[in-house]
Length: 177
Image (cartoon, rainbow, N blue to C red):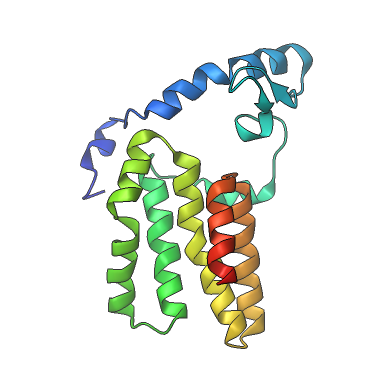
C-alpha cells in the first residue's frame, strides 16, 4: 500500500484491456441472463473465440477462492507475486532477507508494472503463480516429496486456472530446461 496509496482512497487504475473486455463480454452476459448458462463460443473477439477465455459464469472452481485475496486491484496481484517469489527464493536456500529482496525485485520489475497498467491481469496473475510452481519443483528435486508435491500441485492449479496459456507455456519451457 505504501507503493500505491491512491487505492486506499478508492482510486482505481484505468486499465485499457479491462475496459475493452467489458464490451467483448456483453454478448455472453446477455445470453447468460436469457438462457441461464454461458455459451461456449462468442463472435465478439477476433472473429470468434471460446468464451472460457473471457467469461464463464456458472462454472465455479474451489481453487478460484484462493485467487481472490481481499485486497485492492492491482495490489492483490503484486502481493501474491511477493509471497510466491519469496517462497521460491526460500526453496532455493536463500536467506530470509535475501528472499525478501529477491521477491521485491521479481515483483516490481518494469515489465510487471507495464502489464498491470495495460490491464493484462490474467497475465500478471499467471506470472505471480509461476514462482510457486518452481518452488514446488525445487522441493521435489530436493527429495522433499510431500512438501514439493503439495506446493507444485497448488501452484500448478493456480497457474492453470489463471487461464493465460502464453505464460503457462513459457513456464513449461522454463521447467523443461
